[in-house]
Amino acid sequence: PQGGKNAIKIHQNVNLYLGCLAASNNLSHPLKNSGWLQVIKGQITLNNHPLQKGDGAKIENEPLLNINSLTDAEFLLFE
Image 1 (cartoon, rainbow, N blue to C red):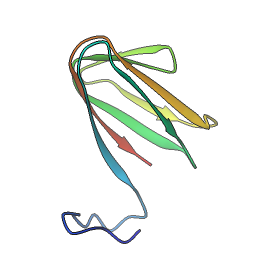
Image 2 (cartoon, helix red, strand yellow):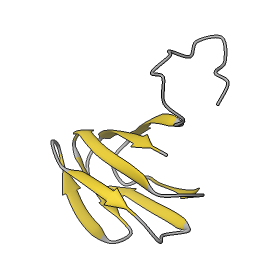
Image 3 (cartoon, one colour):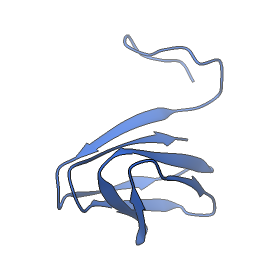
Image 4 (cartoon, one colour):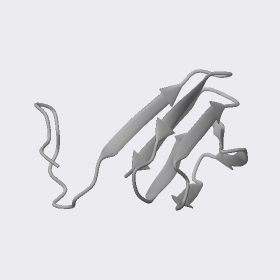
């Protein structure tokens, strides 16, 4: 996809999102294809599966991602 003003080129057909959630917050994200989520900081649940700093998750056949922060957390979502 075409990037915006602050986009970096990675020479792949991918959208890359940085998520930052304070403890006890959540978000939902519709997933169009498969994806990968990498936890950078803290602890979250991804569709009720616990993940912590350093964990990654391959995501397939999940039309909607529900991410809940158990602590202050940061993660990358590759879609």
